Length: 560
Image (cartoon, rainbow, N blue to C red; front, side):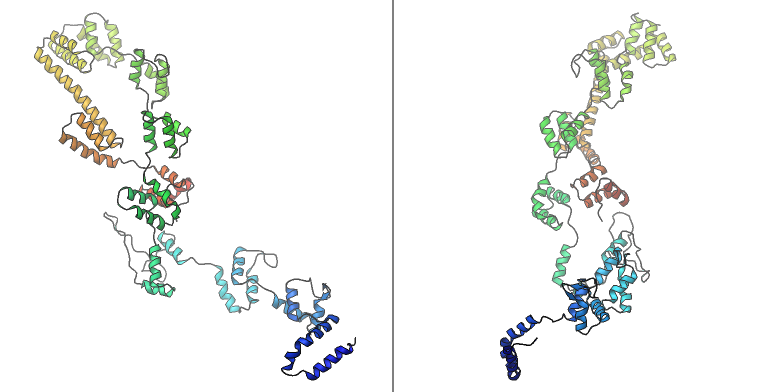
């Protein structure tokens, strides 16, 4: 197709006039003509590099005459002087392959490779070779398939006993110092390693000032519970608590809430006891138990299982005297059996104990009754058998009661009268009259009965003092209350202080502590950190394995 005369004239003029720097000046004038020429004859082919990229990116399924929007890649390659084989080489060069890190991950994970199977060593080597790595380099890079433990992990594994403490290169130089003797007082060994910390930091690109920051970040402060305990005892300030919480990596927005825990809650057992004794109403009781995580049903179960019914002998007295029953009406056998069931006595013994409700005359009363004929010897024999006397003793007692009294018998009778008075079975007037019948003087009678009164007081005093000790050692009353109780009992000051000194020691040995299950539950509910729970279990004597097991049973991940 011939060019128009005007276009030909332009090109002639251009060919004659253009030269050197003038070409740049007239380029804008010639550009429309050039564009018109290409527009009329758009036969320009794609460059070989572009053809290779199209093929590499799978814009066609092949090269042999398969067009893409009317374009044959192979035809364009031929027009550029490239055959099919060279176009294939250009295409292979244009393809992109996974880098080294991606190939390592694919090889480790067994992802399906080009041939449909997991990436094998051949695929791995082929991928590296296509990126230009030499065979020797590929062999070295292959060693990176197996990752190594980080130095910190190796040191921790040695510390925990999963790796040996020595190496083949340093068989006589253990990594950790020996544990030392276990005799108290014990100081854990510390071994100073001759390395310059500033030089070590510098070689890692860390300045001395930066190393100071890292040193401040190392280690952990006490846990929040310990910080609050130190604050309660006045050992640290509130500001120290805030710093400790921040350094423990707890978000500072939680600090005000954590400081609210400085006041401990009374133990649930104390709250149940307050409800039992009428100090707290049910609504107050349930609100306070809820703070411990107990719902209303659980709190009621605890309350109902606390306390005890009247003792069997007390219930016998209530039955004999027609006292009101705890559930309405007069106290009866069913009330007794219910009381046994709610005590720590197994309920199957209820009927057995009910058969023991009767009282029987004492030896002194029985002797007089047999002597004056009010009770027959046969009935007396039956009563003595009920009171568990052996047959030989029963026979002897009946013979003595039915014969003339001797001085020895009178002496035994005096002791029986005093015991009866001491037990308050008979009153002062009756005891005095009976002792006069035995021929004792009023002075002797007064002395005997005064001694009996003293024994009663001493027994009561001992019981009251024992009760005070039990309450104080059991952390149910404080020292001031215990001291006041002893003063009320009339205990001399020196004896009181001596008793309290001994009780203080017993009280410390009897300090209440959470059970291992409660410690693990506290960690499960987020009250304790796993590390704090682990440390408390270890302090209770648990081995590492047992402490880990107990925490895992409560769905708590043990600390590393």
